[in-house]
Length: 163
Image (cartoon, rainbow, N blue to C red):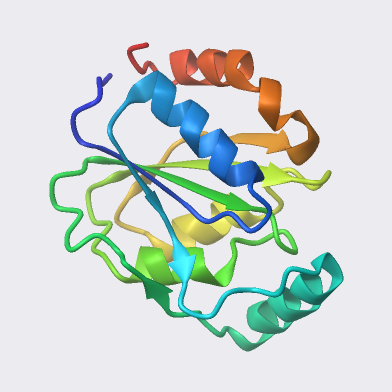
């Protein structure tokens, strides 16, 4: 399907698990990598993050992000990484997806979780980016990230990425 040209790996990571997964994907497919960072960081306490993220989902609040790419025109493939928060994508990821035209792009989700898999986040991405092709993603438990490379290789081969 593709080599390193035209690939952006964009991710949001609160705990570091999704960051590690993004780095492993980058190691395998190349391209550019970008961390989605909210202007106002989330609290460091897990219970507080759960409460706040639930409020954001209910209210539809979208956190402002900083240092986004000036343009994504050169990218045909957008790997989008996030943690499953309440079966959804976190607010900063919505902000990223809304900030750029995703029309005609291939979006490839990857998700870390504590047992909930993707939840309904894939459907949410499809609704949010109706003019994009959303591929089958990979969802890995946050406790298994450090040795996920073999699972990622299998997943990427199924997507027909050159490794």
